[in-house]
Length: 404
Image 1 (cartoon, rainbow, N blue to C red):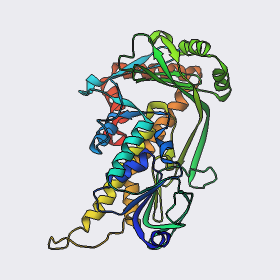
Image 2: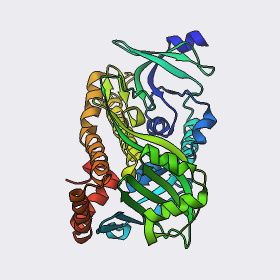
Image 3: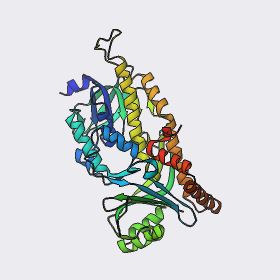
């Protein structure tokens, strides 16, 4: 078996069987491509992911097309209330202004991974769990991936194209830009008196945003603070922490209880170029963003859709001969021209979203008085100018290409 796996050339190797890698496999399942996935983790580790994902309306449409949306546990966000602590000005973005049932949804990451994995398994696409891709060596006609771990089918695996959907963003890589925000995010589930009424809150403070996202009957909390403040907040008991959190939220919601708190550091990392010889990076292997405005996974799924569209166009262009007859030509989806077309298609949205989230953090996460007044004026302008508010809402739902 090992010798066969090592000598056979697959069309596509997807590195990472999390939601991004699984979505790419599922998007291409009917393309007639030979696809395999490899993931370092055991299968159940991905489905136990404790994080919650804020999915934009456009992302929901994509997942609906993949056949996983209806079965997902999800909570609608019909209203988004945006304000900043210590100053005047606020705005409310409402789904009804856009004739939509919701601006977005909150979905447990583990549940999404489980639903996608079930569909990939049903499609018969092999997933090698507990298999680490330790090296990818590109050549003229294919890549040779070196494998380790108890789940590996062989020591090496060959493919026309390697799509890396997880990890690999190292600070010592000359292709990677990194900025440490000097912030940590605390995440937890919180309960609230009177329910959430499908309203999300984004409250900017001098140390970073505090977000409450409707989840079930309560909220998923993302509380950003400086590392030393995060240490203090984790040391508090639940009652003391809730009191501290309530000072940030004010009277917008009355918090009643909080679940276990987890933390992680916030660093912007992104690749200057997401393509190389027979290799493409997408999702968290291409960029990791600050959680402000919840754009990370939504951007990743747009990466997936654009890559799939690019590969499908290449496959379809050689599916039939000059006279309409079906051909047996195997198209090389790892060709440099194919990857260049993908990079061109993603440039505007990708860099636009990176700059959008980075600018929000830099402008709103400080207590510089002139900026504080400018923030308030900007929020008032959003509230008073529907076209501007519409632009921001559409960008959050569909990305940078949503507006002409």
